[in-house]
Amino acid sequence: MKRRTIVLYFFWLIVLVFLKTTVVYAESYLEPTSTVNPHGGYTTSTNKCKYCHAVHLASGSYMLTRANTVLETCDYCHGDGSGAGTIVVTNFEGHTMNKNTVFLGTAPGYIDGDKFVSTPESPFTCMTCHSVHGNPEQVVVLADLNKNYLLLRNPDSTDTSYGPTNTLSEWCADCHPLMLGSNETTKTADGNMFFSHASSSTAVTTYVVSAEDGLNFGPSCHQCHSSSLFPHGQGGSGRDMLKDSFDGINLDSVCIDCHPENSLP
Image 1 (cartoon, rainbow, N blue to C red):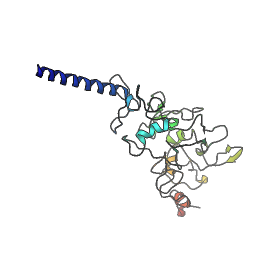
Image 2 (cartoon, rainbow, N blue to C red; image 1 turned 180 degrees about the horizontal axis):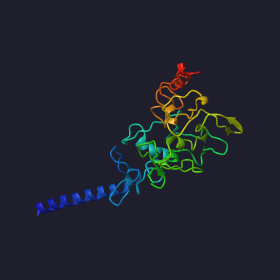
Image 3 (cartoon, rainbow, N blue to C red; image 1 turned 90 degrees about the vertical axis):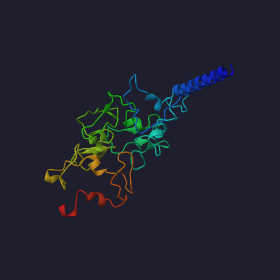
Image 4 (spheres, rainbow, N blue to C red; image 1 turned 120 degrees about the vertical axis):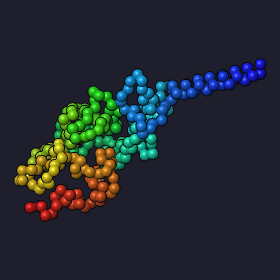
């Protein structure tokens, strides 16, 4: 009798532990790892939603996540020291966004009639550029990228939608239209006329000096903005996501990369 009682005790103890584990599993989160990508690919045999969402025991107010804002939510996995495979470092020299800072205002490089504006009611966040769930109807893999970065087809939802034949420079110009095109093209911002350094949709392989040589179609965005943390931040001592070694003052160190003195007129 005593032996039977002991066996039943351990039996119900195991059942209780199992039920408790099951309840926690059903209602809480899964911890992020570098081997599981929760951004898309959901099927009846996957369990990815729980990496970001809890059904009943969510600790944050934003969409049943661990946090109260979209930036805090992304930072949990992609901030320094997290378990995600991709760590995103941001600062004021790049596309500034983190759990403590939100960019408000008009994106630089705008032209009259084409501005991206971040407001408290509709702020610039990670989801301005990325489809967090990898929705195939919204995501584009650009022609000069070899990876799906969950980029939205239309980050500035007011105008152009981009496809797989478009490049990163064209995509960037959706919010920074003044920056793309020939240096001879007149552009207007706030009623003032401007000309901008030539920039093209594809990278150049020949250094160019002047419009007169017939080659001045310009580099791609990433050829000049070559910071190691592009496009989210600035590495080293640089500024404006230019090369990390740029000290923010002596701009010639950037210019002579493509315009060496012995090639100038």
